[in-house]
Image (cartoon, rainbow, N blue to C red; front, side, top):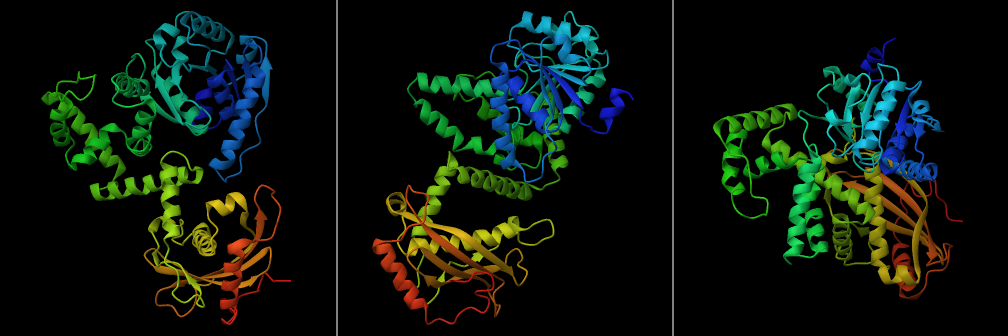
Length: 499
């Protein structure tokens, strides 16, 4: 069976040969190995195996957070002693040696004479032109630049750039292989220094350097200005589509005509821009219109998609409390501290009414279990805030942690339903806190879902359970005393019992 037919069905290669095991080569090794592909790696540098194993350990950790889908059995990593050993018997070769033209030419030539004629050979170079790298290769028609980004095991882009002697079908075959390991190949249509992304990235980098040089801002301020603003949009839409949305023009050509005068303002050190001739505006406008057709979204829908994706990015960063996510986490903490509490402490604690967004629905149109848990988790945080567990108490005394949760789904919830979580304290002692949450939908006479939780107080710095104390203990005991006369919820104790 030919290689072309093998990969036509987007099948994984069984084994790949890697030349170079540095940061990029190690990243390729991790991506292939964790996709179940065997790797034969050549790198004569001392400590190269240890470096790859460290990268692989980081990739395993990252993949464990990236997807809940079970990964295939990990491929086998074999260190070899020569280029020929690395490329014989494999179905694909990736070179990732240091950015020195003569070194890469030598490795690629040697690999091409040792590998079978039909085996694709790609280079990870970030700057060297493929036509130069092809010099001395046997069967140069199967060679291609595939420029990745660090960390290769997580960042999916691979820029594909052919040389003068590369066969047309080589890019198609390579793209299928990269897609099979979760990458997104983008074709560079002409050989050009820096390819696509490095040129765009370097333009921003040069301007950042000038801003610091001219004392307009510090390095920290420049980086924050980017990562807290348009940097958040970059995973969602690129610079050309961003500007089109900014002017809200249905016609791509008219959008670029409106933006043209802005490009000539001397705002940056890099002021040379293409002349907006009719032919260029026609070309660019047609490509922007084609992009809108491919996405099949109206402007209003595209704006909503942008917002939904930004929410996902911000929430992901918020879970790490990093960058713009730290600002989100700080804002949420302030919101929790200002939550209105009942005027009568003898009543259950009530969260504000919330309208369920469409983003909470799964592929069946139902609210996901994670969102039920989020609602109840926020209600638990409300209780802890109410009794006075703040950052100082957590740092010096401890906090409560869930040890058991029982969630009951009683009625279906849908997008735009208005819900409120009502919380009752069932039992308190020196270490335990027993809560019952009811998720109520406006207009219903019973809960849509309930959650029963047992939490344990853990002393700060010990990792072990310890008694709650101080004013927090007093407020908690008082809250439990006031809730004691309330009717016990019908479903309480179905799974969690106080002994």
